[in-house]
Image (cartoon, rainbow, N blue to C red; front, side):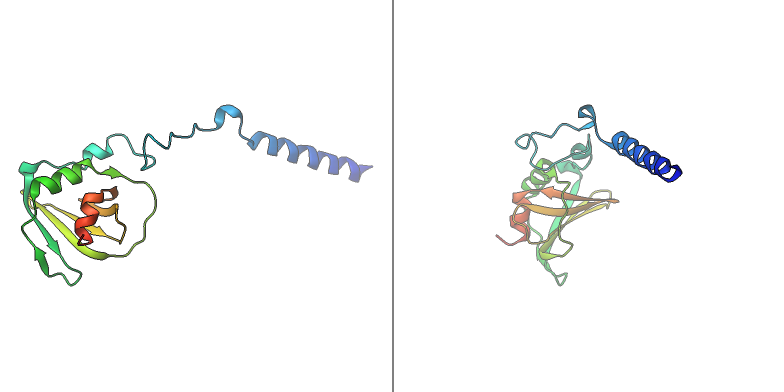
Length: 146
């Protein structure tokens, strides 16, 4: 009888623990509308934080994988607009470099490095201490030489 009683207690306690860990209907997060933001979750203000002004840009240069300058005459206005209009994507990406690398040098001598990993719509940008996975078909095409 003593053994049956302890087994019943273990089963009841286990059941209560599992029941207590189960999500209630109110705990389930609402699913985002897939049509409203194709990039997924974007932290509030992050898109604006990465933006730069055309007046702050000193040079924009394109380098190949060997580090040789390919083109130093890119349309600054077009590049800045594409960068500012890009959306931050919270999905993972392959950590490899393919195509060209773009370096935007700012007047305060800060740099923004943008590289491609072969995707035709997404790029990786390093701005100060932050790396962004960006949706920007315009920048991706430039980096892939298209």
